[in-house]
Structure formats: C-alpha cells, structure tokens
Length: 105
Image (cartoon, rainbow, N blue to C red; front, side, top):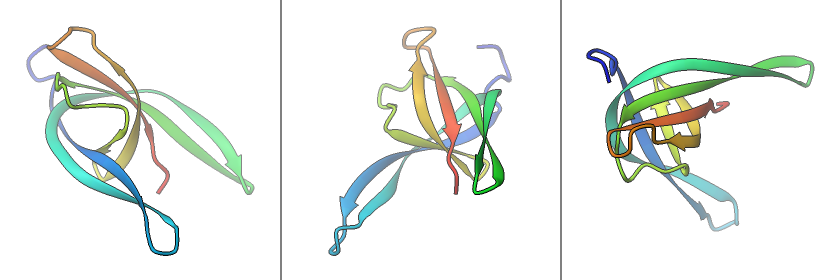
C-alpha cells in the first residue's frame, strides 16, 4: 500500500445474538478493534419503501491483514454501521479488502 492510503479510522465489532426472557432476539455489539483503512465508494442501490426512496451504498474498505476479521462482523465508519458482505485477500497476509453495505438505522 502506498504511503498515506490508510487515512481513515474504522472500528470493527463482533455481533452476538441472544434471546431475552420474552423470546425477542437481541443483537449485542462487542468492540473487536480499531484499524486504519482506505475507503472507496463502489456503487449503490435505490429502492422504494412505502412511497419513500432509500439508497444503500456499497463501500470498499482496504486495511492491513488481521486473521480474526470475518463476515459476521460489523464495521463502524464516521458514525455509520456497515455489514461486511465479502472479504478479499489481494495480498495474502498483507492486506484485506472488505466490501460492505450500509445498515439502515
């Protein structure tokens, strides 16, 4: 990676799903780590829900390799949360690319 490419800070969280006393599913985010990354907006999709148009961007994050990162995690960038939908290893054990979809809050 070129110098200065990793200029953004992202947080990764592991997600655990449990059920409360009434049977409702609860999602708990547990902090995994803080990483330096590069960000690139790739594409987006638009849809209509109850006569309201919504857009969901697809974002590519590049960062240094970490063996513990998996697709069951969520990524936080600038206060927004993203689902990791695909992980690419362009340079094995050097870099990792995370393709993510923005979560609707």
